[in-house]
Length: 72
Image (cartoon, rainbow, N blue to C red; front, top):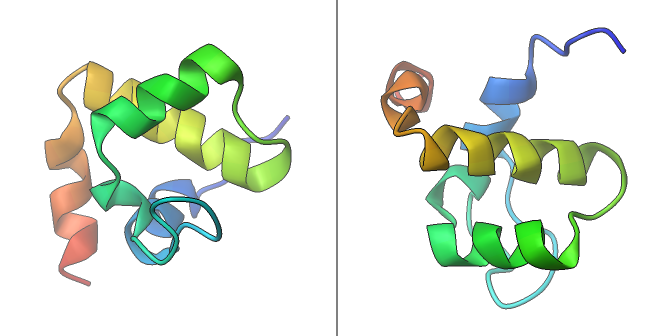
């Protein structure tokens, strides 16, 4: 699978489409919610890839990588 160059941009622009945090921009989702998905299983498709990527970013303290993209 070829990496999507827009993946990080989607994390700072795309709202959560369902659930408790519907409408919340993905990068603003709480870690506890991402950990829940990690235990229960991420959704299929692009949303699952985005949530899994965001989980890795937050778990490794790399949220600062998203800061310049939030300003665009």
